[in-house]
Length: 214
Image (cartoon, rainbow, N blue to C red; front, side, top):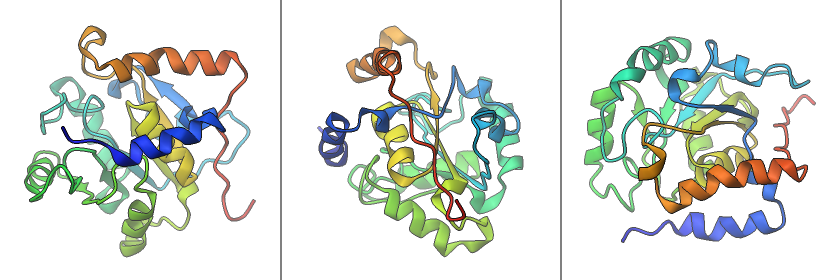
């Protein structure tokens, strides 16, 4: 079994700040992401300047254990590539590219070939890999990212993808339903489906990212 040590450690942060796992916006599936993506976060009284997007893979734009873009999402995926070309789009997965899982980088290379998008090689699994993501964008200044508030994280898991976004000071877009049917999802995913409305009903809200100019 390949455990997520980062996820286990960081989940305790939710005891003191449960809003860390709440998204700034929600879409049912990858196809429901608005064009342009920044529309998902507008109307919240904050200036939105998204220059780069971090994408999860499994149950976000691909079926788990597959490196191929889910066929129904291919057109939306290509539009997202047009919106965020080159280094402005980055895949960060807890399988492909996670060196504790993808030891030789084979899955990352296969995913890059299938999608045409860079896959981050990272030692720490989500949600604890923010430093590695920030270092990536610093290494590629052509992406135009100068602050985490200019990054949007898109993924299907509240306790990995969305926690990553909030801990990094970025925008989080939750893919609520994903590719995999609910009855086939893990117990953790099913729990998260109930957790979000539970927290919102009790007044919890995600904190807005702060730009360096605010």
